[in-house]
Length: 110
Image (cartoon, rainbow, N blue to C red; front, side, top):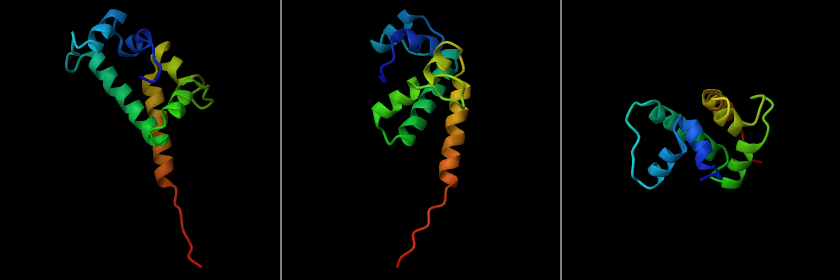
């Protein structure tokens, strides 16, 4: 999904790569309220925000994840995977959503 490697998802969820494999094969479930569960909720929120922002266009979502973002001062996927900054990415997306909803569009009929 979204072109993520299992190892990348494992790092986002703070799990081992084998754990993600077991989750994918339905051999294991996340424990409610565990760190992995909390990280998964955040990652789902990131995905939902991106899905809304790009109207479900997976190519645009993948591009956003892998393209340097000057406001975040890094590549969002790497910020989440390597630096554990999923909260920063999520906060940024929520601010973007707010900016979008605050925009007023006025249509004038001739």
